Length: 117
Length: 112
Image (cartoon, rainbow over all chains, first blue to last red; front, side):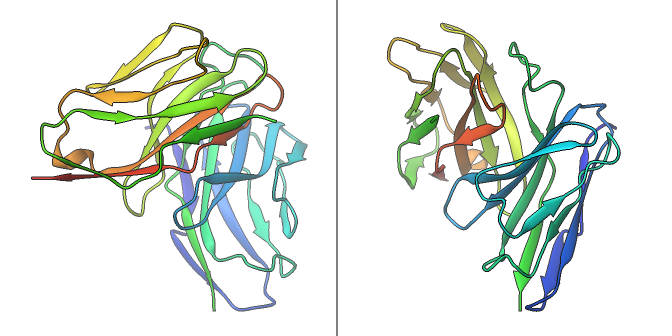
């Protein structure tokens, strides 16, 4: 079955540590995205990538980093510079973000819940 | 910039009641419009979408019509079930940045 996988489902981090969240898709989608969700709020864009080896900052990129070395993978690193990293992190992908007509439809993974101890 | 406004929740209904969740948007050009649903502890599932004016998206008894003249995309269902209890997000992809812009979400609680 095609889809998006995120791991781990739950992640605990001590203050001052960097952690990396995994996102893999086998949908052959060009574009991938990372969003952050805080309780009772909508999703905010952290980073997105429209093609391999290219990515752009979203609205809340400070304290986060990404890489896109393979089409299937878009890992997110939460660095110690992120002051309030406890949140639910969602990864998404779409066929082609540069067009409309449905090819920009984003599909989401199950999420990773990060808690800072 | 682009923005989405949806009605605040929670919305509490009895089973078989009619549901409307209002959503309005601000965007340049011709955005694509989406409704996503989130069940507790899970990611977002695409519920329905519309990619041009006057399109009606539908799925699982839910419907929404892309109204460019009123910049709205209200979600409706004729008869809700307890299993519809979830958080519903209205969202758009604009003509500039292609990432989604979300509303704040509306929690629906359906009582038996």
